[in-house]
Length: 72
Image 1 (cartoon, rainbow, N blue to C red):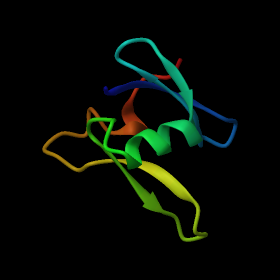
Image 2: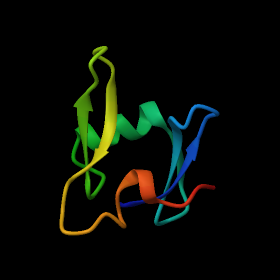
Image 3: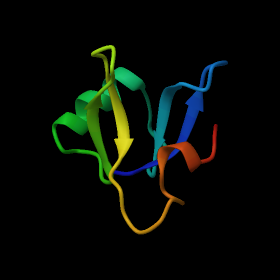
Image 4: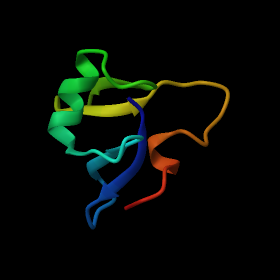
């Protein structure tokens, strides 16, 4: 399962993600899947405030970074 699109709020924070099969999940549900190793190419990291967020696993390209994915 891979994230292909993101939906952001007015401040640019990802609120929902869309997967390669068209399924859409809110950020909290996607974080839970990622923590269980069910999403390819992402990891869960703590923010400075202690909340958890999705982050692309660094590789040789930036095209697949969550910040660079198309919005839906």
